[in-house]
Length: 375
Image (cartoon, rainbow, N blue to C red):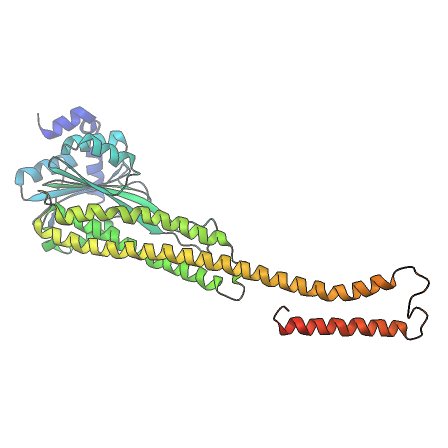
């Protein structure tokens, strides 16, 4: 039984016209909107299915099964199949066609995986976490700063399958950029894997740069004249979002190191040098995230210190005014006692004298507190 017939038997896609209907729509609309944020414009999870030979895109026609079979008979090329959030049923035919391992298929469908690289026979399975900076007019204690998604990549001798989860991280611009460099694309599926890894890490650096702007803004406010009034929830929110970014960036270090150093049949030796370059960029991103975490800790401690200092200053002012008010309170309390024989009670200038003594005492205390920085 042919591969196409086997696929039809397993999934029924060939019989019901699923992949063929996708192929017909592809011929009607040859230029697919790969940047579409949600489902494929083809009406299914299949975003695109193209083949390359000697680094040049071939004008294949027919359904994806026929395209793959012709490419494999001709040898020397590979197919790139892109999907977005496929269901079990939608991915079953693809898994059967390319003989993908069930564990890798389960990871690709379920998502929410750590960045990793796994080998299943002749197939390499890689998981990348994608990140996107969420624009916001003003940072609050509940603002979303970083949004994450995932890209799963299956790499074989003659195929690349990308499965994307999330509403960002489109590979359309990446595909178009690779097609303008036939020399690099001619190196096979591993060149696509490198381009995806490089694209993901470049996005990390872009998000980190935008993240730094938020940190700088909060830092400026904390050390401003009224920095003690800054909401500490904003600093904690930045730390939470930074943790989300760390979960996407840091675990990718070991998979990239493995791709750069450990030989694999589906990864050309020449491409391994490119993975080392990507690993260097990732290391810079990791170091920057660690520096941000330390900086946010310092900003938070500085904010708490400024709050403490402001509270101490307020307490000193309250204490100073209380001491000043205590003088007339004491004098008035003495003369408020109901005794018959008290000095100055019947003296003509007694009231003026008492008021003068109170005023002089209060002024003297006020000047003393001002001189010592309490007021």
